[in-house]
Length: 468
Image (cartoon, rainbow, N blue to C red; front, side, top):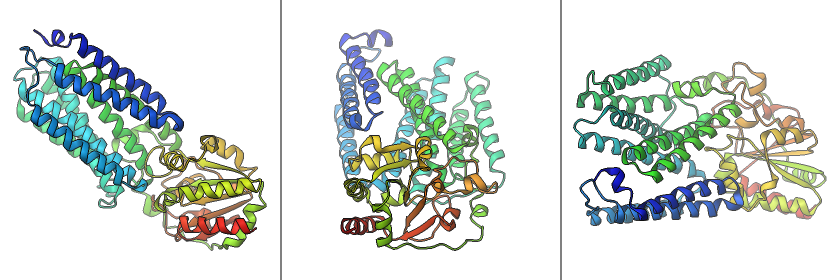
């Protein structure tokens, strides 16, 4: 009985069909905050059905079912417990790190699938070998790159630029392609060649993420996520597994689309991401400009300014997440609304440490989705805004992106906050943002600095507003 006949079991195919449909429905629901939680649950149910159907209904070529139930369920139990505990304990500020780590584990699984299939099939045909090699390469790059991204996000790994790094990356990528063609074509189809490609892919994954600057990390996370999806899809081809193929294609395509959109938002090219020249090297030069003089504003003056405004726009950044001040920010919004002030939120596509970070943060505080303005809409409304309150954002409002060709973020679209009448920036200190460059906005005439922890400042601001 061949593998196609094995998968012809009606119950197994039905389970895979249900899993595939729930993945599609779940992804669709994830496109809106009001249905995102339900969409996640729907996809999880579909995955559970597919997993248990595979365990109990799948048959090997010899007609035997899976029998290592102790190991299988021990692994499921351990993974479930660890995943649940990690998800419940993680802070919103550490969510990007968890996303990177989990994504890396997905890449590692795809890599291990390719390794096992290569070892179990002494002489695979060229088509199958190509799938094995491609899955191994992409999974390995995703795993190695994601682990580096995880380390950079939690601060344990620093940005490091290697002299001639671009040429090395080009050489590594070219070497991987040439050796893969030789292996698949049978020119040098040896285990040593296969494991050599594996080692080169791991090194490339490290090298292309290592020099990337912090401000560009959301794009890299999205790209690595798409790599993992593609690698999983190759696993679906290997096992002729429809649900694995569907899930991998959905993740890969969604991640790729998001990466392209974010590259456009950053005014970067996808080519620069792939060769590893994405952001970090110029940060020191960009940050070496002589600082100007800034002015501070008191809480009372801030409260009066906002209370008598007709329109206020809040720009959330990573500092808001660090202070876990999203709920207090929503409280500020409600107090202003009670005073007849129109409040909206300007969301930059790469604010925070991962795609959609600020959207998730504010959704957690039940901020109405219609109040979240995408960058283009926010900029269109900025001219009619009386007060812009920036909470812990740096690089996404830095005018150097428009004015300074020497800046590493030059050309990146930003939230043009200077179009508003007044700009108030809440920060702990004058320390540069994640990109490591000085923000000239802080020294502009319209800008006033409101120092302090975002949560405490917002709490005191709410109290002051109630007395105005």
